[in-house]
Image 1 (cartoon, rainbow, N blue to C red):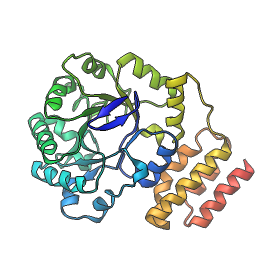
Image 2: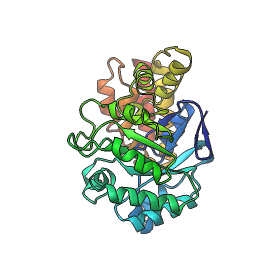
Image 3: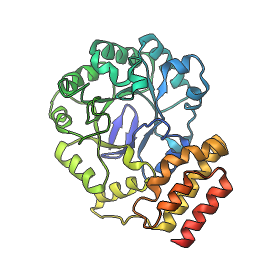
Length: 324
């Protein structure tokens, strides 16, 4: 058993990483069904929350079946982050997570996300203020450092812990890498070997199979595993990894019938949440994953990226099931 504040989690929990325009309620529902132990919302702009921006406010919507769930916030201004944490707490999540890892230019250019890796004093002060502004457990997600020459995560892990956070998730890349190259978990292992570190340390980066998950867990002794891009259109990965970690069994890849059934379920949830047009557009990010490795699917995948309505999309999915 592992605890984050008062939240009880299984030993070595599997977490769905927060991803913009990916980890919406529809996808979270599917990932929970297949075994994700802890999930996070898409990251939410502190400035957007304060301004009552519709997109930011909508991301606060969570349901009881998703628990435990964290709301992730990001920003540059410390006072805005304090207010955002208070607003997030009002939505009654189980925890609040601070994003110090997002590498995309539109976030970094505003001094938020991974940009804080270049301003450690502000990062630590911001974390301290957020922790003090809420009664909920606060966690942090970040990266190794800004670039290859400034991998500072091992030096700042203790400082982050001393602010009062309850867990630290580390993506094993620098900001400069974005998502390229191979994730280097060496510093994560170094942090786990630091006797002063008492909070759970979660590893993230390149966990794309049950065998890779076990390798990272055993080699670096992390307290939990966070899965991001490998789950897109592939919610089965949580079930597969969990079965392998616990029982050593490799669950076969889902057959076409199961892929179609889950894809339909996800599609209907997405449309219900966002409306037909937006729901279908959001699903286009997942279609490739749902049919990865399926033979003779190329022509159909192109069509899925062009279907304008729900009935047409459902008909195409059924045609795939009956033809391939």
